[in-house]
Image (cartoon, rainbow, N blue to C red):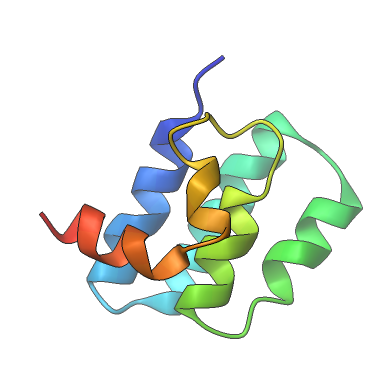
Length: 82
């Protein structure tokens, strides 16, 4: 199952400089895929856009296209601004 749409939706809010909505969007979408309190804690503990991108990319259900952003979350900012 490809869950890239979850990451893209989150990134759309980040690009709009709406961290809280990005966080809530990710929380809502991840809950549908992985109903885990640990996932919720990981998302809600994110303190800024970079940490949220890194945490989102670290979920095992993200595609191989998304997972590299775990080690380089800043690249997601440039890739998704296009």
